[in-house]
Image 1 (cartoon, helix red, strand yellow):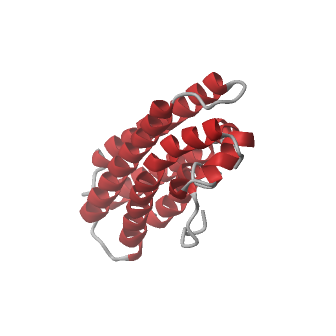
Image 2 (image 1 turned 90 degrees about the horizontal axis):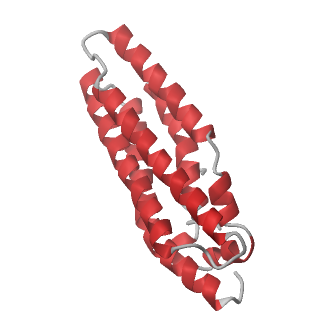
Length: 185
């Protein structure tokens, strides 16, 4: 059951990494991208670490209580990382492009919403009954379903934010470059 949870997390990680794959000669776009990207990499690392802990817990023969603690801690970490990503984008301000205000607002709102949803998942996992295996498994299934929905919620605002001149500038920033070791995301 926890394997479904781990698989569903991959979709959420894709949203976080959407910020990290995004050049133009525009100095303004480069300066804006640097502000955003300087805050991205540490948060992506936190999300990857949290996902790894859930994957590890799902592979081992851990008790329900251990799985519950691991998953809840991971969701808390992911929620905080998305909140920090939202702050990084928010603090950078609107990108220097047409419709920059809307792109900025949409991306910040989306990241904050994702953070909130992971916070809700943490509370859900914290509330699961580990004494009854079938209820616990049912609860994990519900969480996996919510994760799948969250992963599919889309990253339209982030994609728009990364398009055109600003996206090219982000691709040139060290903090936004995808590492070759990023696991299938």
